[in-house]
Length: 203
Ligand code: GLN
Image (cartoon, rainbow, N blue to C red; front, side, top):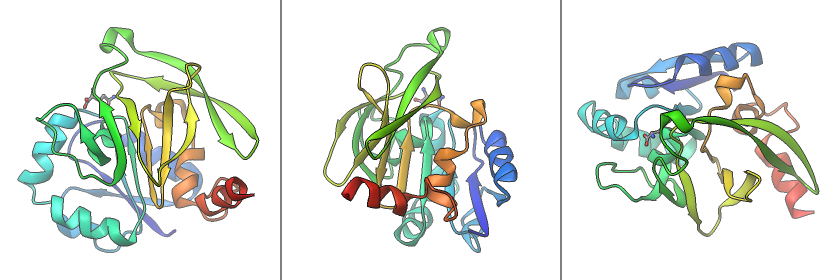
């Protein structure tokens, strides 16, 4: 893909640019509806979902993002995952409803409980391990229809979910310099690209 946008209303957007730079993919800032023109994918970063929810409406981004989502992939990390969920157990967040999941905010504990766990990423019958840095992270409490769990923690709780061209992570791969999750959505040359995963899962 040629150019990916990163929603820069608030939060941890800078390190996503570093991941895309290492992947050789151009990434640009999205702050206003017109910034969605000319991009082929979007990242909603971690941060504070209550604030981002307010800012999405303040900058009239809700409808443009939902229209964009019909044709283009969107990845949400941590607060971004919360915003992509269908159901959030906190009325201060008005989610976009792109992923058929329910999430419980801050369910892995407060900032002081932040930790890097070992996650498991499923690729067919094999799995790879990856560091999953959880910072006031949301717990995915329900996974609905058409949502594939691609990764989990040692309690078998989902950490990575994929549904069509929408990907949600409850942790921050950009902090650990991990690009495989960005590759799932945005790099068609990668073995992790979502259409390859579908084939492996279907086999
Ligand atoms: N706890 C934050 C929220 O609910 C998410 C934290 C994060 O993105 N690291 O919005």
